[in-house]
Figure 1 (tube, rainbow, N blue to C red):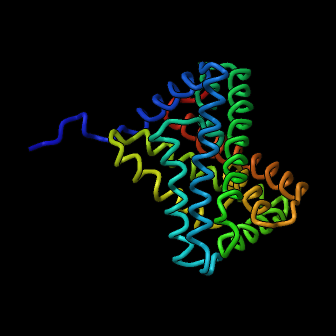
Figure 2 (figure 1 turned 90 degrees about the vertical axis):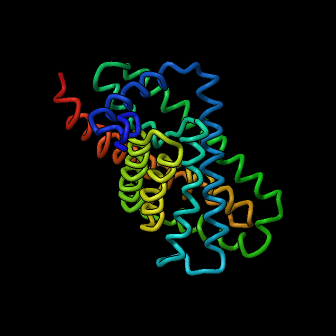
Amino acid sequence: MSETPDADAYKPAEIARLIESAGVAKAALPLAQMFVLALLAGAFIGFGAAAYTAVMTGVDATYGPARMLGGAVFSLGLILVIVGGAELFTGNALMVMAAVEGKISRHQLFRNWAVVYSGNLVGAVGLGLAFGLTGLLDGPMGATAVKVAAGKAQLPPLEAFMRGALCNALVCLAVWLTFAARTVAGKILAILWPITGFVLLGLEHSVANMYFFPQGWAAGAEPDLAGAAGNLFWVTLGNILGGAGGVALAYRFAYLGPRR
């Protein structure tokens, strides 16, 4: 029996149009709804980051198969965002496609980014502080949390920027691939490998770091606000470049034609 057309994955040119339409819908969200969905996304990514912290406890977190397992576990965050429905700043870099096409204004784009980034921050920080009240960070998991936060705070600006750019290229590619899938299982599989890859490679995700820093502080790390702010600044800029430029604009040119 031959497959019906509805069972086929969407083709890349169709994905480009779907993402463009999604960008228009995201830009039109009321502020309160946008913020709540962003808050949820920050918490969802935080759950993935917490699971990563747990699975990397007691093993060499630098390289190897354990790091790959950590990436697979961390994928929980984006699975919750995509399947559950939420607004994630890094994935919303793809809204540039709608902006370049003139379907949304630059004001709408930056409004969405600002509100979603703020909501992600509140959700991720809130979850990090909540984990500090669970008692789970009092033992070995807490030592891992301290180590993760300290390492990120000490990352040089150029390295943070480049790791952020490469990270969000993979995150946006994961989101892109989910638009090809017509089933929940297909979307989960589309997320799994790009996200596992970026964690395995040691790349930097701004929203995940919004969780990792307060988790480390809740576990007893000395708060390094300057280091955390510097990391988030450079990683965020890199995330924008990698997602908006490396994926959104490249695919927009490839499948929607040169700018009119």
